[in-house]
Length: 150
Image 1 (spheres, rainbow, N blue to C red):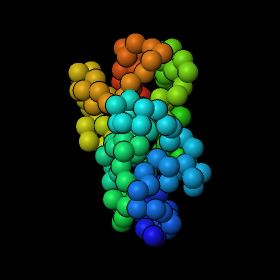
Image 2 (spheres, rainbow, N blue to C red):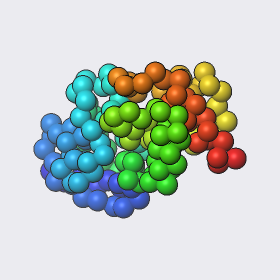
Image 3 (tube, rainbow, N blue to C red):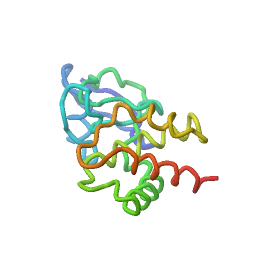
Image 4 (cartoon, rainbow, N blue to C red):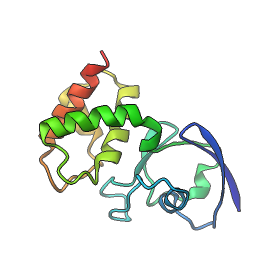
């Protein structure tokens, strides 16, 4: 079956099966920044933005995205690059596997709350697990990245 979606501000038509997950659809179409982690929505590494809200793509059926706007890290490259620089400066990106999902989550937070407290940042990141670093360096990186926009 065919569905119509907008991915990174570009209209797309995907030919999918009814039981296909968004993670698989996106990777099949070259959006390789969307990573596979836990396959049960608990690690956040597969996060994409669906109509500007972070969602786990590993458990979201693609058919439910008909007519929606999907953003991957390729769609926010400037913001992701800026966050990546801050994460490198703070030692917050040891393996980098979770960086795309963190960048997307930070971008969504910025749209919703451009001046969050550290506690609000931590609460927003609750669905993104990182096995390499403590979260404090990530919070510092996100804070600095958000302050750059002021």
